[in-house]
Image (cartoon, rainbow, N blue to C red):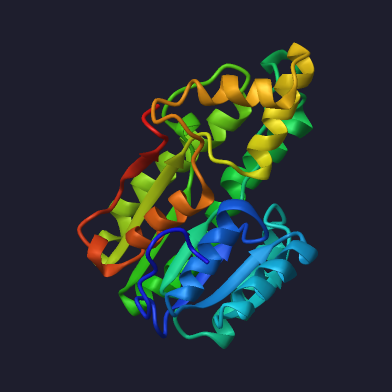
Length: 263
């Protein structure tokens, strides 16, 4: 059940394609779109987690279909997108929530680690978007929402690879928005910070280990850096994502909107 108001049938008969739907923000977005009437095409590399998302959607009376593939393998991405577009004549909404992130010193990042981060957080999104954007141009309608990060607006220590990928994603968002606006397509990004997901839990655990503090102590210290006084929830992000995907946001494009508790 959503902690915020759900707008029933807002996306009735819409086909909504979501990457990174196996957990966290991506899963929450998929559930909310399904609650609001969309047929969700959920994508992830983790089949088990994707099945859990699909089961959650089914329990709420929603509809979804699952697509398992590795977004870093461009050939797999193109084959999967071609298969989806062969079945569905129109994709109305594309949401990218795929991503990895963790803290590490720049001097310790090797080439493989750097390229993996860029491939997941940027390149995979770019090449998954390409065939879907063509479909949206053909239909002269579409909403694309990329889940980026505050780290794509402000550089963060120990986040050089992550920030580089998210700055790239924000630039991609703004440039693509200008290119496709004339076709009735809106492209925006949301830039969360300190959202309570598995990725952030792992980050806090690592900080606790390094500082020799308990998890709760490290978590309290982490929250002290948030003016609003709490960590964000995936539902906070999904509420913004669904708004940007709605026709109520038809005059908003090329924006990278922070959702950060005031940070």
